[in-house]
Amino acid sequence: MNQSNNRPVEKYSLDLCKFIMAFAVIAIHTDPLVDCSNTAMSRIGYLFLSMAVPFFFLTSGYLLAAKLLFPFSRQEDLSKIRRYMTKILKMYLLWTLLYLPMALWHFVATGKTLHRAIQLYIQGFFFVGQQYNSWPLWYLLSTFYTLGVLYLLLKCKAPPVTFLLVSGISAVISFTIDALIASPDHFPTTIQALLPIIHNTVQHGRIFTGGIYLPLGMLLAYRKLPALLNRILLPAGCIASFLIHVSVVDACLLVIISVSFFGIVENLSLKKHRIYHFMRHSSMILYLIHMYVWSIYYKLLYKHKDHGIDDFLITSALSFALAALYILLKNRRLKLKSEPFTKVSAK
Image (cartoon, rainbow, N blue to C red; front, top):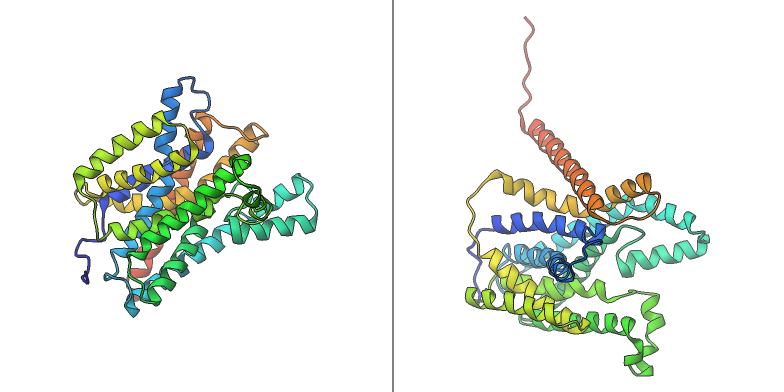
């Protein structure tokens, strides 16, 4: 298959769902269900929230691939991937700098020595993708690393089918690391010997998540799963995840659930409206800024880290207000730049 994707890059259903999933990420961190006594309701809620970050990865891969020509290996396509990598890296560096004061405060508050603080910061910067309360940033680092691998494969003229191999290998590594950390006694001693290395580098399998979902998102831009299959896999996967409580199985089911859910959302047809443009741009701002808002909120009100429905509602409202204000000011600045400069003659 060697053709361009004729579908428009504008996918309003993805814009809408990304906006919703940004609030789901806020819910993951602020945990509004912490006091929910209904086990079934909590399970369903956390299952939905767990699809949030995979949806962001799938959408990023899909929208990137929609701008490329299959099989993504032309020089023009490689240049677009490089530019996208540069954009992601700049975002990571900028937001890491913005979250630096919080990291420094944490190092001082916990009594870390200068040597240990530098060591932890370097580890968080290169291997984990986060510092204290800057958890969303790992998404950017994981995206950058994943795109780097895919770029090298495409530069070597590897067919896009190898993306499935990247996704599979990333899943095995991520799930194995998490399982090893959770239950080291279930592994042979030779594997357990890797724990100190893991602890001093990636800490957990999260950084490999982009490698699972982003390549799948790129492939889904050209090879859609049948709509009927998505409608079958989503409820079946949710029921299985609801009934089975094995971490590795849950992780595998999450891939199935997330991909089928993405397929259903991507297939929705929504009429053009300017609200989707706002949702598209505000979703990433919400994703990146909410940890700052939440941290300030609970430190001022509770003096310690707090979770609950009030944390979620206040953090969501303030983050949304900041995102809307930023977009408003940005649009106004762009409008002023686009207006021609005219001289008014003196009377």
